Length: 75
Figure 1 (tube, rainbow, N blue to C red):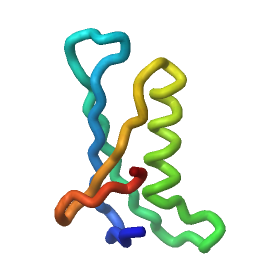
Figure 2 (figure 1 turned 45 degrees about the horizontal axis):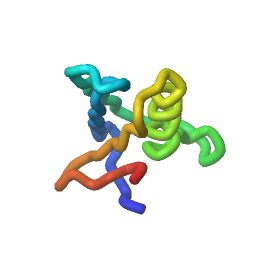
Figure 3 (figure 1 turned 90 degrees about the horizontal axis):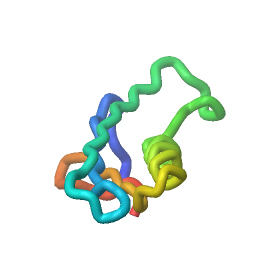
């Protein structure tokens, strides 16, 4: 799994469900400040949680990526 520096912004996009024209773009930035290993959130956890929430509403899986070249977080 890729290692991303703190404060990296991740981006994912997905078409609207049901064949409607349009799409949704989602971004998030994760910056863990003064945390213990147990409480640290990872980009993978956040990406999977956002994708699961969208899938519950009928969207396909949202794959997020981050720089430098985009690297997929949750393929």
